Image (cartoon, rainbow, N blue to C red; front, top):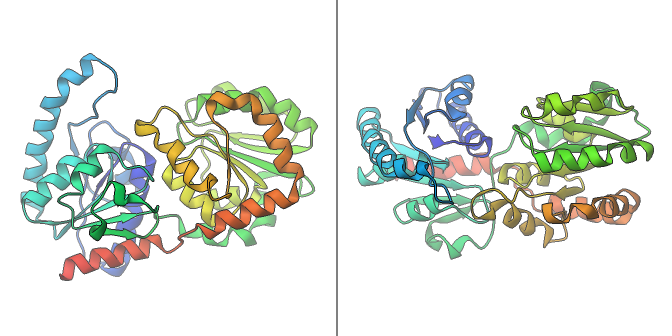
Length: 356
């Protein structure tokens, strides 16, 4: 397995490994990640062995870091070939991130079957290059024939936490868990594990207005910003967290969500089926998040608020919280996009590769 750099690449890889391990308890797993990235910590926590490559991406602007890229690439390819030769995998699965490029390339050159799991509606350059040699490409969105060979594409969706399938039955438990008032509406803000400066600043600007309008707030600030914003816990009905561990109860408590538009987050929100305002990060490669969000917004299944338009927040939020018909339409439409069996379907494709 190779995937990392962000949770959006790591957790799908771990979910796939967990599903395979459950079906094949004697199977051996090895993850390959990028040294000094979060997978080197998160994968061992999930119970799997990991090897690190000295690899990073090209910076989009001119920088001295780019001078090291050719050396990092050569080093990573050399070590990826050594890992493939030593571990002798039956199949190699890439979920995106810097390390998946050298790993899947080395595997395909060695004649090992490879599968790409592409989470986004607009793939990055690594997966576009790898797709030429990959045996199968599991995707979560339609229209990726523009980037990948159509005969290799299987629409499976993105792996998600299975406990999210039951959030509709957890409302009372969630209200109790967070210490909320069941008579009030709840807004949940998810800006990613590290946090999102623009989203946090937006909520800070409007937090007193939200409280005055009887809105409760579960606010994941991210660990980078928690110390700065935790003071708002003093306001009635406001709960700030660096990180939310019980996402099932978080989603169950929500009446409306504000979220970044990472691929994994969108897949989860489709299953949860609550009204969402997406605020995509404009700082990711190829503007992935805006493209991901638009694939949902264009189906009348969510609202989009760009970082350049944050002054429209109060108007958009007021309309959504006060318009039951709009809320129900968004909930109904986003739930239609859910693919809850993604992990199992991806594993079926891996099994076909193993026996072919």
